[in-house]
Length: 203
Image 1 (cartoon, helix red, strand yellow):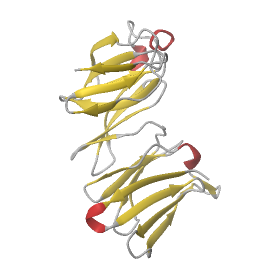
Image 2 (cartoon, rainbow, N blue to C red):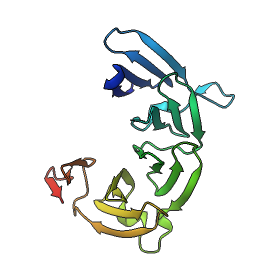
Image 3 (tube, rainbow, N blue to C red):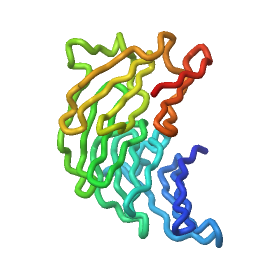
Image 4 (tube, rainbow, N blue to C red):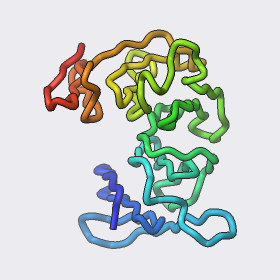
């Protein structure tokens, strides 16, 4: 009943992930099925928590996404799994040529080698003495801006981390009423709607 869709316009292909744990590759011009991949966890025969999957990211011939228990790198040409990492989140990953940055809502961050799936560093953000989840709220989104990882929280905070080691470089209360929407970044500006339905714009 739920789907997660991404388009590859260079190859006229749409990829969509169903709540049953099936990833489809379809030529959207001819309507032909290219391949289908069913994701299974262990020996239980149950789907990989796809009801709570993160949005998919298409990059460098690979599809990246997380389920409730794992993060996947999948070859977009044939549907084969490049690697699987036992880390689950519903937050959209940040993908660069060499790295993937992941975050869970309770503040656990990972930097992962995009080619191998090996963890480079991991941090529990809320182990920081100054930053507590009761104060900032849960992590709700993740971006890479000017070589820094930017996370937004449910209570209206911006958190900035060094992408090289996950150390917090700064944080600020950006919306007193908290965020209603996830950010959109356009032409160097960050657009958000707060819980009072006001449009907020940040440089």
